[in-house]
Structure formats: structure tokens, C-alpha cells
Length: 158
Length: 177
Image (cartoon, rainbow over all chains, first blue to last red; front, side, top):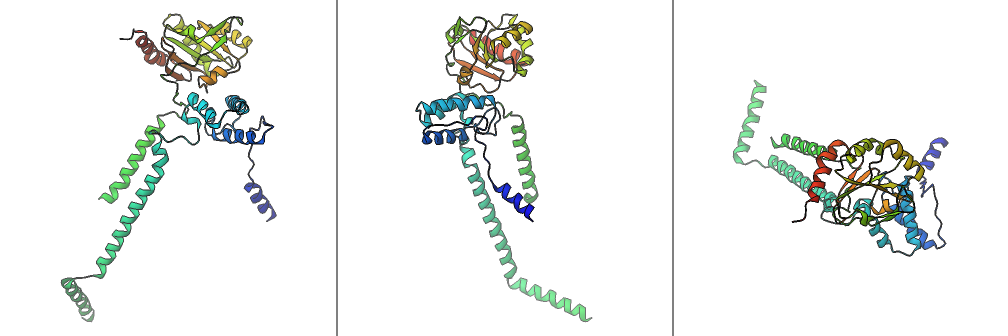
């Protein structure tokens, strides 16, 4: 019991390794915050599913250093991001900008949501239509039904 | 009938998407530098530290810039082909020696042959960053005006050279009409 509780507690703790191999210190905490926010948003192209902050690749180290220098030199976030995008393309951004190449990426999920809503509405309409069809019989159908039922009771009697 | 054909159709559509997706290597990221002027550089040459090589030295002719390093295993794979191709004088092949030591790089060339007219020595890798290099070897084709026309990521094979690089160089060499 204690063991299980311990495992759950340990698993729910979030240990984030920020640029583990080379922690960077700024004298200005605001710059430090910007630096860490930036390297968390930039993809490392060598190990594509890691951010620069997570990656141990040589290139990631170089790029972290480049960003560090630029933050220190007083460059704005947009300037630094543009610098990287000009060289490595939109792919370095975990949140790519909205362009004609990426609109499907951004709006694709909503298209599927609309498709899902459409299918759901159609299904519900169809089902309720079928239900109504059972409850309402016209005159001839009602007559035929009584006949059939009578036939059945007659056979049972016989 | 549609009830049974629809899932089949969706499945077939997915298969087509997967086939399309599997034929694309996610490691090959298209470079934003294509059809843009090559980033300029002014670096010491690998062979003589006192002499610099500048991007302008590559201009005037269609040239190739091959990013390589002695620590790069895949470079070793394409190297014999580069040496062989350089002997035909069909290409103006320059090297960008990336994040290497001079000693290792020179030993590598002495041992395996030097296909390059000249190699620029980018020890810090800053020019590599300007060229958006993320996986050596990479090869850039520059036209006469120093515009990047093509980028190949990873080792070149004979087919790449014969079917893509050589025809492209030939086409770029023709005077603009």
C-alpha cells in the first residue's frame, strides 16, 4: 500500500531537465526566463522530438549558446526566432506560424470535429425517423396487423 | 451497400495517406535557403591557416559546397565517390570542414584522398549554423551568382550525383537566356 502510494507520488512529480549538461545563469532573472522559454519552444533538428532544452546533441548545445549570446546582446525574442527560422525553416518551431502550408495542421482537427458533428446529427435523425416509423401505421397497415394477429390466435385455438 | 463500402473506402484512403507518409523521410527537412543567396563566410582554409577563403571565391562558376567532418561516419561513406567524381573535373567542389580539429581533418584527407579544391575550416560551427546544417554530410549547389539552388542532406550516392547533381550543374552553367 505504502509502496503503491510512493510510486504514484513519484510518478506525478515532474522532473524537468533544463539543459542538463550546461545550466546557464543570467544576472538578470528576466533574461533568464526568456532564455529558458525560447529553448523550450525551439525544436532540435538532430533529435526531432526534443526541444533545444531537452537535447544533448552537439548542435543543440551550439544553438543554446547562440541564443544565450543573443539574449545577452539584447535581441528581442522575434529577432532570435527569425534568425533560426531563416536558417532551419518553420520546422524548428513547435508552434509553426499560420501559412497556406500549415492551415490544414491548424484547422484539420476542427474539420474532423465538424465532420463528427455532421455524422452524429445524421445518425440521430435517422434513428428517430425509424422510431417514428414504427409508432405510426396507416389504416391499411393497421388492418393487416389485426388480421395477422387474429390469424395467429385462430391457429393457436385450432 | 454504402454502409459496407464506406468503411472500406475510409480504410483505403488511410492506406494511401500512410503510403504517401512512409515515402517521406521526416529527417529531411526542406531548407528555407533554397533560391536565396548563400550566407557569406570568410574562414581560414584547412590547409593554410593564414589564408582565408571567402564566399566570393566560389562565385563565377557553379560550385558545390560539401559540409564534412572527420568524426562523421556518413562522410566516410560518400567520400570515395567524391574523390572519384573530382578526378573527372566535372564539379567545382569545395569543402566546409565542420566542427573538427585541423589535425584530424588533414589526417583524414591524407588517408582517404582530397576531392576538394579547398576546404574552409569552421571550427566553431557558426557558418554551419548560417547554412542551417543539422546533419553532416550536407551538400549545397551554388549557381554562378552564389545563389543556393539545391541542398542534399546525408551522404551522396552515385545515383544522386549522376541523376540530380550533374544535370543540375550542367543546366546552371548554361548562360542565362
